[in-house]
Every structure is written in structure tokens, then in C-alpha cells.
Length: 288
Length: 268
Ligand SMILES: Nc1ncnc2c1ncn2[C@@H]1O[C@H](COP(=O)(O)OP(=O)(O)OP(=O)(O)O)[C@@H](O)[C@H]1O
Ligand SMILES: [Mg+2]
Image (cartoon, rainbow over all chains, first blue to last red; front, side):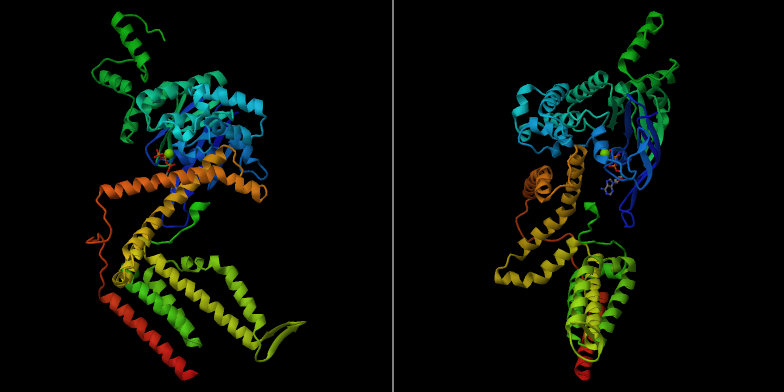
């Protein structure tokens, strides 16, 4: 059974006003336990709206969200506990920091869960390390940190609740390339270590291609495809028409194919591409 | 949710009323209020009803929206209605139970008051439905500009109002976002006693204030970068222009007001 499931999920903003806008339109989706799902789509395609419905922050206009097969908007369902199980890191989460110290801010979520001091302390230190925050930063005021550090604190604040599903809405937006890869690889390590389910929203194919096991492409409030990265990138022309840039390495291999140098499947990570080319040059089978 | 609060509640359309000069719309609305309160007779209400219906029709605002504008004052309506109904004494007694008494006079006055308040709100909402808040402040500034001679900082006041209006939706959106983000971390905003609830607001108010200050600073900087130096010698992007339709509308309004005043004098 999928851990999280969306059935005919629809959300319309400002119903009945001249600004009415359907941001999510009859979306069906199944997220399996332990998966690492990437969600991409152009600006305004409804990614953030969809994610906010997944943890019960927005009530769907129509359709249902199922967590472990149970409707989260069912009568008597405990939505607060749903939010502890499905943790959501918002787009630009650094603006939600409010405590006097980083430590206290990360502890806000676990404290709301009613955990004891010792457990909170363990979680705060563990997650701070997982997102690469140094020990001495914990006693600083959040406002004294740099943008990237604030972002890490905010991510740690949600991770510390140890949700079974961790959703991150563009965690790397506005960071420098180095900070981006660092946050993403730390996220991957976290995923490997804890085995939790991760959903990563991003604008950039480049970022998600490397990490995810499945890719959801949204366009104009609808699902275009939901498949493994290889199968998604196989429909590259379609994606480019929607204004989504393919990863550079995929584009290189497409150009090679146009010139008659073909490889069996789509290439979307640099390592794999390099190995393919090396093997071809040395006349052997690729080893991965 | 918070974002459902429509402040200024502007309802963009391409109607005659929307295109009217906002200054005239303000003056006409004021005359409309004078008319409603001058007339102690049914004629004022009929004229007021006529005004609201015609204006709604001309502005293409769905009548549903105009009626919806009455929703926030339902409690006031009920209280005024009941007070008038039971307190006024005069004419035949229609109903009596212990000390509660309903008389003809009471029924008449309370119905009269209710209709009057409804018309008042409906008429003024039409002004805000058909005029964007920014244009409205421009018009107020223009109408108040004679006060500049008395050294009143009219431009500065209008600018402050414009900025406040401009940022209210932004701040509401921001509050919504912060609230969602804290709820995602398990903040409990709905239960508990007053002290617990006040305490629960801290995680929302602090980020909100921080962001408001940041925005204010950025805005001040941006205004300075564009050489803003107050109202002196400043020209406008949108110049308020009056035309035939404004004169006609104002003329009709004055005629209606005059008619109500005359009828009032004759009938009493
Ligand atoms: N609070 C709101 N009120 C009204 N409309 C909204 C609101 N939030 C989003 N929308 C609209 O819903 C659509 C989807 O928005 P959403 O934020 O889900 O997009 P997104 O895919 O996350 O975009 P981005 O990549 O820019 O973050 C957009 O067209 C947007 O204009
Ligand atoms: Mg978004």
C-alpha cells in the first residue's frame, strides 16, 4: 500500500471571485514507502499547492488525500498528527524562524509533539548535524545567520519531527551552486540513513535528476507524467515544449544521438554518461 | 482563511461606473448619504433604493456581491431592529407580553431604520466595489488638496494611506504563509485558553514584524533611489479626469436630493 496517495485532488483559489484559479486539477498520485520523489513544473504549475494539501494544510476543493489508506480529512481525523507524520518545509522557510536561538527554533516542532527534554535534545543535535549546522551556531540568534544557514535551520526544524514523509518545497531556491549541491547531498544521506519517504519540489531538472527514484512532472495544474527519471527524460521534447530545461548531460546525449551515436537509454547523470562514453571508446560494456 | 478577507473589495469590471472619475463618485456617495438621512419619509428610502439598483445595474456588479456586503453588519441590524421594535411607544399596541410591548410606531421605525442602514452599506460598498483603493486615495487627496493651504500634509497622508493599502494584501498573504509554516511544525492555534492562545501567536507575530520592518526598509530605500521627495512638483501616472458622464451623474444626484428635500418639506 502506498504511504501517501492523492485521489482526484483538486484545489481552486478564491472560488466565486473574479480571481478564481484552479491550481491543482484532478491529480492522482501514489507515493510508495521509502521513495525519493522529485516534483518539477514551471512557475505557477501548482507544486506548492499540491504539497500543502498532502499534509493537510489546505483543504482540497475536491478529492481526497490518503495517508496509510486513511482519508486525512475524514471526520474525527487528527490533522495535527498528520502534520507530524508528513513534514513540510515551505518555499523560503527562513522567514518562519522566530525563537531567540537556533536550538530553540529547531526544537519548536518536537516540543509541539510533546516529547521529553532528552529526546528533543537528541533530535535537535542530530538534525543540526544532518543539515551541516555547526554545534556553536545552535546558541546564536537565527537572525544573525546568513541566508543559507537560516535555510538549514528551517529544514532542520521540520526534520527534527522525524516525519515519515518529508516534503521540501524548493529547498535550494536562491542559494549558490555549492550550497545547493551540499543541501541536496545532505538530504540524500538523510534519506538513506532514515529510510523515510522524501518529496523534493524543484524548478531544476539538473538538481532532481541525480537524486530521485521517481519524477512527477506538473504543468498547468495537471500531471504530465509520473515515472522513473529515465522514462520521463525519454519524453524530452515534450518537456522542452513546456519550458522545462533538460539536464545538460541529457541534452549532450540527445545531440550525440542526432549525429548517429546512439545509446540504449536516456542519460541524466554525469557519472553515468561519462562511463558510457568511456566504455564506448574502449570498446567494452559499461559497468553500471 | 485570512485571505478571504477582501479589503477594499475592489471588483474590477469595465463598466461606466468603473470608468467614472473617482472624485465624483465620492461626492455622489456623500450626497447619497445626506439624502438617506435628510428624508424622514418613505420618499428618501425609495429614492435611495432606486439609486442603489440603478448604480448596481450600471456597474455590472453581481447583485449577489452587493447583498454580501451586508453580511458583516447583520448583528448590528438585528440589535437596532430589536431595540427600535421594543423601545418605541406610540400608536396601537400590536403585541404585549409582560413588559415587552410592540406598537405600530415601533414596527414602522424599526423597518425604516433597517432599510436605511442596508441602503447606506450597499451604496457605500458600491463605491469600493467600483473603485480600486489606490485610485480612491488619489481622489481623496485631490478633494482634500485645498487643505494644503492650511499647511495640512495632505499628500503625505495620502501617500501613507496608499502604502498601507498596498501592503495589506501582502501582509495578509505573508501571515497566511507564516501561519501555515508554523502549523506544519505542529503549532496549535485553535485550542487552549486565552493565555495559551496568546502565547501561540508569538511564532506568528515575530516573523511577521520582522518581515514588515524588512519590507518598510526596502521600500524606503527603493523610494529614495527613485528620488522621491514628497508631493512638491510631483506629477501623476493616472490623472483623474472628469467628463460628461460625471457631470450627468452628479446632476442627477443633486436633482434627486433636491426632490427628496422638497418632498420632505411639503409632506411634513
Ligand atoms: N494564495 C493564493 N491565492 C490565489 N491564487 C494563488 C494563491 N497561491 C497560489 N495561487 C495561484 O495558484 C497557482 C499555483 O500556485 P503554486 O504556488 O502552487 O505554484 P508553484 O508551482 O509552486 O509555483 P512556483 O514554482 O513559482 O513556486 C498559481 O497560478 C498562483 O497564481
Ligand atoms: Mg511554489
